Amino acid sequence: MTFKYSTHLPNTENDTLGAILDAAANPEVISLAGGLPAAELFPVEDFRASANRVFDNQGAAALQYGESAGLPALRNEVAKNFLKPRQIEAGVKNIAISTGSEQAIEQIAKMFIDEGDTVFVEAPTYLCTVDVFRSFGAKIVTVPMDEDGMRMDALEEALKAHPEVKLIYTIPTFQNPTGRTMPVERRKQFVELADQYGVPILEDDPYGAIRYSGEAVPPLKAFDKTGNVIYMSSFSKILAPGFRLGFVVASEDFITNFTLMKQMADLHSDNFSQYLVADYLKNNDVNKHIEKISALYKHRFELMQSLIESEFPAGVKHSNPEGGMFIWCQVPGDIDTMALFNECAKQGVAFVPGEPFYAGDSESGTMRLNFSNVDDDTIREGMKRLGAAIKKFLDK
Image (cartoon, rainbow, N blue to C red; front, side):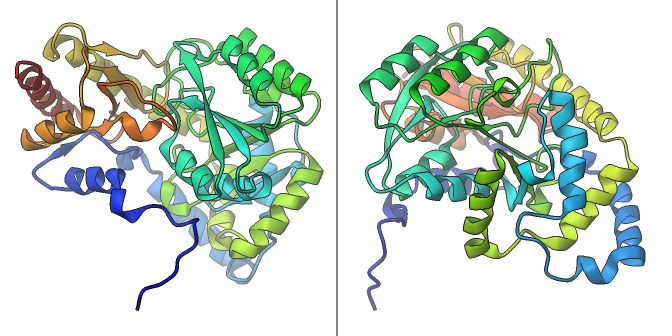
């Protein structure tokens, strides 16, 4: 039988990312392609203790249905441990728990986007967000970046040219894929521009806590005086992605509407995981845990950065992130990055080509490298293979 699918289904005949991930999953290939956190830092024993406490004291409640907006105890811990230190004032009614960042993006897109509506994204940006926006029929307008993130002159030009725009999506801190961070003054200008033109900002901040150099910068939400910024983050990069828990912070009215949308998706996020994470945050110093993550990622970033400079051909440019999990590289010349990916796969190493991160025209020769989930020896061997493959490709 041939099914008549809706337009929301992505084009499965052109699944470039799927092909990349399949190649990267080959055990003979060293993968620098993923966005996985370091599994050896998952606080397994602390969570075992939390699980025991939850079963001893709240077992029946944790295994029952829960609130659609999320466990109040967890939302309190989010406000105390993640929002207040980042200068975001929020109470329980301003916070909703989501089933990871992916659900938050999908539900918020569903709240704002009708077929043909305009949304702004950075160029490049998180590839799954591009897929979600496209699935709802959005017209995606890309706003150029420089080394300090989305350019405000380009944003204002886009706002003037597209007064119909419904939403601006941004990752201003340790951006995926580039690792770039927007400075304070530009953040203030960003919030003011969005207010001036009456366009909400969706601020995605999954990596902001993982800083290993430089000075901490408050999220855009910290400068929001009108409730125009919708802030979202995740426990996936700082605790464990298997819990599939994230959170959204916004006005009470927005959270009420977000909760209504979420009820249609899954009633509520995993209740036991919420109890477990709430107990962990109550009984452990999450900042010390984040310090361990940041220290390890700093070491792996510095190792990979040094090997880019020693193993790659002259002229390859790379970003210099102060946190997060990625380095963005660009090989000189008019390079077909998918052809380069295929050459590198033959040499036993994989990256993510830059093309899927662009909603519009892409820059040639771009790639994203991940260092968080590979040990030192793997980084050394992987970068050696990658450098050799790039040299071979450029010599053709």
